[in-house]
Amino acid sequence: MQELRLVAVSEDGSYAVLTAPGRSGRFSLPIDDRLRIVARGQFSRLAQYEIEVESPLRPKEIQDRIRAGETAEEIADAAGVPIERVRRFEGPVLAERAYRAQEAQGASIRHAGDSGPGRRLDEVLAERLSDLEADMEEQRWDSRKRADGSWLVSLVFTASGHPRLAEWVFDPRSRHISPANDTAAGLCLPDAGLPPMAPRQPSATVTPIGSRLSQPPAEPEPRPQAEPVRVPAPSRPVAEQDTGLASDAQQSPAQERPARKKAAGGRSRRASVPSWDEIMFGTSRQPD
Image 1 (cartoon, helix red, strand yellow):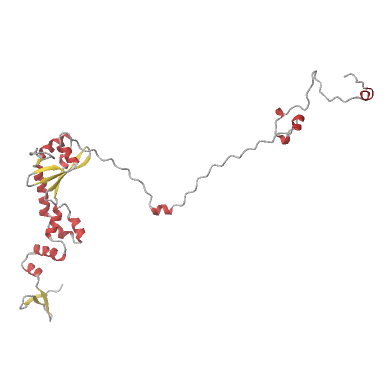
Image 2 (cartoon, one colour; image 1 turned 60 degrees about the horizontal axis):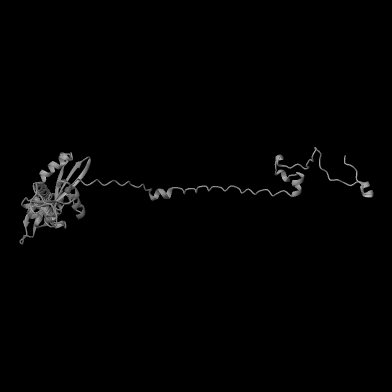
């Protein structure tokens, strides 16, 4: 880094004349508000001046947004500025928010329709949180200013292993506080309890699109085959039934009928053929 020395100031005071030791030539440096602040040693004022000139956010706007509940990280990301420029202005505002939360604990509770002041919030909470066996060391108080000038005071506590959030609306002028959600109402109303915890919804398992595209198509399930239709065998002709002959081995031997019927006495019945005497003389011979 090259060293420069101040040798003169212009007649109108708009710039300074600088030289480099051991070199010829001169340099001019505009005298603006930054240079005047540095000359007076007000370096903190220089940081504020940089925010006012280089950033669209003004210090008052930064503090108003922090007072309304925004964090320094959120403001810096939205404005596109380094977070260090925002943190310079958050200290006093955070202290103000903590003070309002502490002040609200000593305010009297007022419900809808009440005409007079009620009990103090800290007294009621001491009893109710003890009954709920809440962890008193894990309580976290905070507040933020609303657009109507009132403050929204919040309390985060743990009861039965579940974190809870209670909120009240606090009016510093009247020093009254009223419940702003069901949890706060359950803590303040004598006959009310805490609202039930909402059940957790099971998360659905979704296969990424890329995985679905890379998987081979599923093979179709085999369809059940229909049983073959059995066609009954055609009925046998009468001649086959009488003679006891089966076509193509279709019937069992037990189902075959005898070819001949036996007559009484164990003899087979045969057709009678007339003899020659019967034909010529009309006589018949005796049976055997």
